[in-house]
Image (cartoon, rainbow, N blue to C red):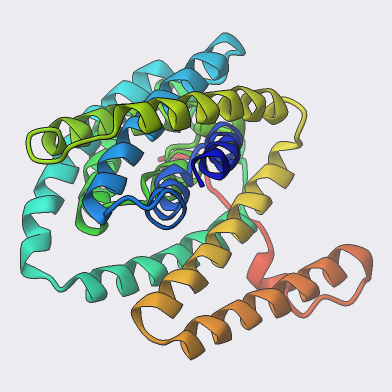
Length: 290
């Protein structure tokens, strides 16, 4: 099972390197159900794996010029503060309610990613993003991430791409910086009470790092628009899993079937002139800033 865990960890790394997210959602089930770790040990080990892998992936993206450091560091610092506050607030909200709300938010985010945005003349340049806007977004994303305990990449990439105005490849690279900061902060909190099997953790981390390097190279070969859409469909699929676990299997199955049907219609839209989803997935016009 350890060998299988290491092999699957490569795909976790590819997800992080290629999509800029998905690490914690993929790593925790891998460690809990394949490696046989208890929940807290799996979460703590996941933070190590995701933190190291994201850092390596961020370096690869940075060398290719796909990291906006100023935005990433400010966003990450604000996200850490928001995550801490979210962790405190989560004590008063049932976990099931948090995850159901997160799944619904994932669906809305996925639709936004699939619709995308059309850049307008006079849009804010990447290096001119206001610090206040970045801090506000980081706090909100961190707050939600702290509430649900996972899924940072699912929130960071859309925030950077759709709200922060970063092109998708740069949003992916920058998100890895943010995820690294939040992962190591969370790991520090767990180490005081949770024992980590460092042998297994380092093996899984090394495998995930290999995957992240592969994912970072693949990013340069993938069309940004196609990458954004693939990310959106991936988020939709993961939301079905959460709904199945937190509400009922039938609800998750219905969501999965709906996603599959929407995917089929979306594929038809790209190959025929008839498109019943044209209004849903049509790119939104973005006006120039005031």
